[in-house]
Image: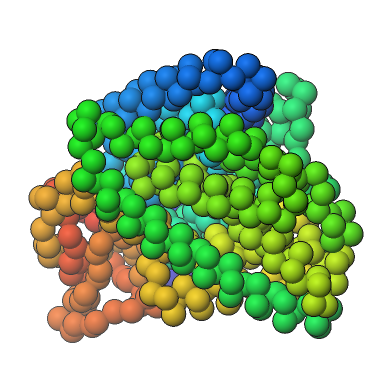
Length: 539
C-alpha cells in the first residue's frame, strides 16, 4: 500500500507538480515583461495626453483637430473590435471565460490588439486605466506558454489564470490581491493547482517588474504615499457604515445605468456599428478639456484627494470652483465616461476609474461627515474604504476588496472598518439583486458573439485509472470542465453514489459527468487528462 502511494505521489509530482511549476515560472517571466512595459507606456501616455490637452487650451484654434483625431480614433478602435472582439471592454470578462474553458482565444492576436488599442485610448485622453488590459495581457501570456509548449487544455486554463494573476499583481504591485482576484473571479473556488500556478507566476512577474522598472529609473512602489491612515474610533464606525451604504447605492446606480446604456448602444448601427464608438471618444474630449482629472485611469485624482491626515482636501479646482463642487463635477464626469466606455466596449481598463469614482464620492462624504463629528485624521482611510466599497458592489468580489485595501494602504490595524464597509457593500448588492458585473458582461459577450450557438448538454462516463490525477483525489481539488458537474459515481462493486466536493475518487470508479459543450471530443480529452485512459501507464 505504501509503495503504491509513494509511486502515485512521485508520478503526480513529475506529471503535474514540477511541470506546473516550470510552466508558471515561464508564464510569470513573459507576463512580467509584457505587462511592465505596457504599464510604463500607459503612464507615459497619460502624461503626454494631459500636456496635449493643456496645450490645446492655450491655443484653442487647434481644438477642432483634437475632435477630428478623436473621431478617427473612434472609427479605428471600432474596426479593431470588429475584427478582434476579444478585446472589447477591459478584457477581464473574456479572460475569465478563457480561464474557465468557455471558449479559446488566439493569444497573439488578442495580446497585440489589446496592447495597441488600449494604449491608443490612453494617448487620446480617455478615462482609461491599465489594470483590466494588464489582466488580459497576462492571461494571453499564460495561454501562449501553454500553447507553445503543447500542454493540455486543463493546463492551458491554469496558465491563463496564473498569467491573469501576474498581470493584475504587476499593475498594482499587489501580489495577494492579484492571486485572490483571479481565483475568486476565474475559478470561483480554490484548488491547489490554481493556487500554486498563480503564486509562482505572481512571484516571478513581480521580480521582473521591479527589476525592469528599477533598471529604467521608474518607481518600483505603488502606494498612496501622501495618505495618512489613522486608526478609527468607535464613533467613526457609524460614519463608515453610512458612507458605505451611500457609495454602494451609487455603485448600484452605475451598474443599472451601464447595462441600460449597453442595451441602447446595440441599436446604434451607423458606420456598420462603429459609429457608437464616437460617443465615448467625443465625451472624453469635452471632459478632458474641462479638467485634466478626467484624463487617464484616475491615479492622479485619487492621490489629490489625500489630506495628509488633516482632513482638508486642497489643490483640486475645476474652472475656479470650490473644492467640494470640483470633486462633485469630476465624479459625475468620470461616472458618465465609465458608462460610455463600458457600454460601447472600448478596449481600455475601468478598474482604476471605478476606484476613482468611489474615492471621489468618499472624499465628498468625508467633507460632510467632518462637520457632524467624524475625526478629520480618519478621512484618508475613509476615502480608501469608499473606493473599495464601490468596486465590491459592482464586481461582488469581497475578498479581493479586503485584500486590496490592505495591500494598497499597507495598514492592517484598521481591519474592522474596512471589513464593515465591504460587508455592507456586499449586502447592498445582494438586496438590490446585482449579478456580479464581470459575470453579466461575460454572459452578454458570449451571447453577442454567438459562442453559445452550438452548445448542447451531454453526459459522458469515464473510468478512473490507477495513478491518474483523479485517483485518490477529492472532487473539489480537481479542475473540471466548465459548466459541468459530476452527477454520479459507480463503484467497481456496482454501487452508485451521488458525490459532493469531499468525495474521494479511486481507481476503478466510473464517473458520470454532465456538461454543456460544443465539442464532445474536446470534453472527452479533457476528462481523460484527469482520469487517465486505457493507454495510461501504470506504475
